[in-house]
Image (cartoon, rainbow, N blue to C red; front, side, top):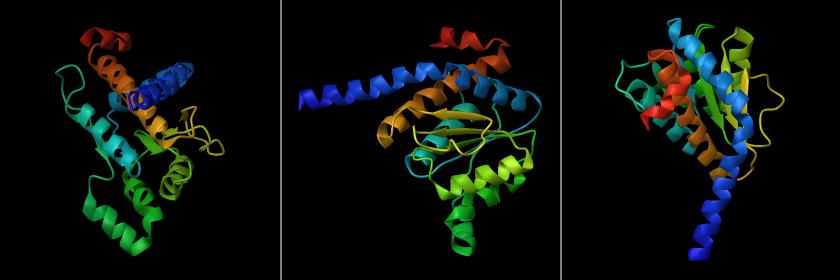
Length: 196
């Protein structure tokens, strides 16, 4: 059992290390989100299953606190409103649960969409509609997903194993929270490292 545990942890660590090659995309995502917040915009987050849980977690980090005590940031996870999710799914189909809620998003906002496979129909429907309306999108996916869609920033984790992709999305999300927090409240994104 110990060998299996070590192998699993090392495999996840290996994927996360490979994400260092995505540093330019992570920086771009941070700058895009910081700019939206500074201009009075909001952040919307959405995903299914484990990605929904991660979206909720990251929204909470920004509304509450990540590493520093500071004012709340306007971040909203679309799966938090169970009445809206279930009503839309019931009346229009599950593919519409994010697109319809994101009707409130404007070009001054930013949206983080999570799909480990890149094939989530409700995420794709939202992405296509947001791009058509000029709303900035940061898309988080795995190795195979979303390359045919024009997200402003594409975070394609180099793995097709769902758990590994989700592990990496969590780490990237926390890096973004740190960069955003310090970028807005200290004016220097790199300072977040001192708050560990």
